[in-house]
Amino acid sequence: MRPLPRRALQALDRFNAARPWDHNAHYHRWLLRQLPRRFGSALDVGSGTGDLARLLATRADHVLGIDSDPAITSRARALTPEPARTSFTVMDARTDLPAGPFDTITCVATLHHLPFTDITEATRATLPGARPHRRLFWRYTLTWRRPS
Image 1: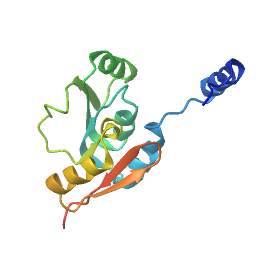
Image 2 (image 1 turned 30 degrees about the vertical axis):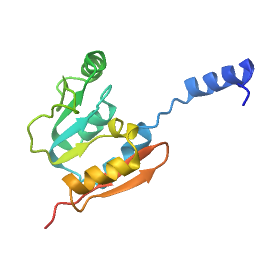
Image 3 (image 1 turned 135 degrees about the horizontal axis):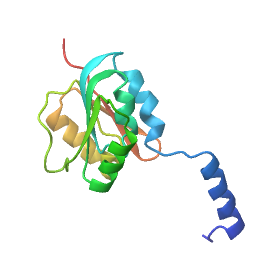
């Protein structure tokens, strides 16, 4: 397959600069539709610059965003206005997680690096009754409702 001509790449760059879009933000509204209007606490794993954590804070009493990258965590703090119901900390979810409980846990970007079969197996082992789904752009969603 031949690479795109330089003019086509420049046109794509201009288009993306005028209408930025990313794979993760595409699912933010969907996530909000799955949640109650108000809830206590949320954990956003792989929070990046904090876009989803700040959206969750419009409904939650407090949101903790964790990310393994100190620079991106610092950026998230800088982008979050005070006073905020959102805090960010550097933490690697593969080896450490903050103590809960949390009413909501989101993880938009972190798990897309795993094959769907791994997601399904981990779900069955750790959260019986949860339903993993394949989504566009190599993303998965996992829905679970606390039993009554």
